[in-house]
Image (spheres, rainbow, N blue to C red):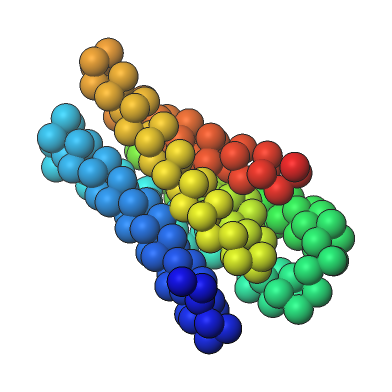
Length: 200
């Protein structure tokens, strides 16, 4: 049975909503699982250090956004043929903002964090968040073209790679920094996938 003209948009909206919800849910569950693993492997003190670094980085990651993702989504939704120009403008703006964030993060870590272990965690999570902001930019472009399944694919790959790498860390009895490095590897794969999809 063929769908009516009213049913087709409704079905597309439901599919897109489910794809976005599924990707976000998987990403958040992955972060939750990683926190539990860190707590069980290293104890509450290590989880506290990890949580402290995450909270600071979560604030800093807002700086390279500055509404760029929403602006790109709105622009491409109205003018899809403008994709190449919007993509590269967004990319170069992000590079400049992320470079500034990197300089600030190094200065903040050196002068405001006296604990060496906590500082290294902060630096590793900052690298992860730098990659995340590019990944979110690529996801914004996918959302503008209503290809929500690509967003879900990116997030699923990132979570899967992180968890597999963390299993390797558990087997090898890696340090807390090694576990955080596993998150960076997962985020790198997610960002690379988003870049590859858009370039093709």
